[in-house]
Amino acid sequence: MTRLAAAVPLSLAVSLLGCATAVKPPAPPIPMSAVPAGEAPGDYQPSGELTWTDLTGVNPVRRASFDDWRINGPRMALRRAPDGKWIGKVSGREATLVTSAGKVAGGGIDLALTSDEKGGVAVDGLWGGRPVHLVLGKQSIKGTIPGGQIDLTDMGAGMFNSYQGLLQISGPPDMPQVVLALLAVILG
Image (cartoon, rainbow, N blue to C red; front, side, top):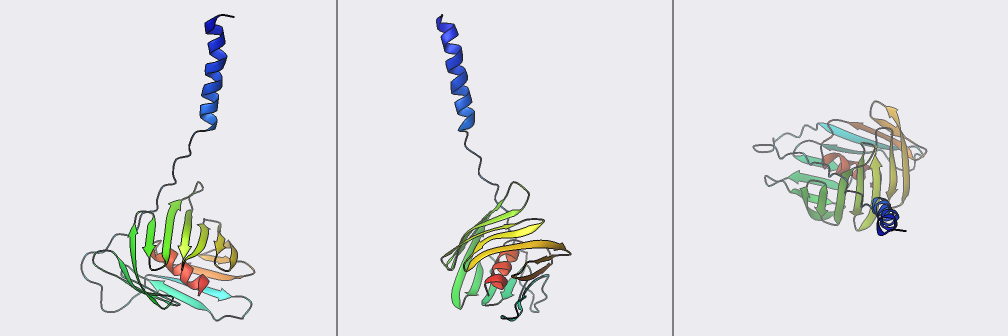
């Protein structure tokens, strides 16, 4: 066997091995909504709202709302500062949340928000120091939250349900407002 004939199978094996071990590129980060110009208006007029109804009737209905400047919900009251930080209370504790493309961090919250392969939003990280993994898809909201699994199916018109409860979402897909309001209503 000539050197060339021996080298061809070896180079083919190396190139195939290289393809099999190619590193998957990182998921694209979800952009955060831009800080609006000027000051927050005096009157709070929410542009979006999330409502969680416990279908067992054990827990009361929980609501969270948001606009460009505020997020209000169960155990959450945040206001956006002119520098883009979200300042206020989360779970009864003072918090300052810093956001950047695909990232929300501060006050016991450390979340990565990325696009998944199906066009949904993957949320991974910590909420109150406890692990969170959610995928907000077009047909479902699934994942693991402190307290267990969640698996909600799209019913249309911004409604998702399961045996666990009914989630209603209205308003613009502003980030990080939607994700923070969602976690506030689900986790109460």
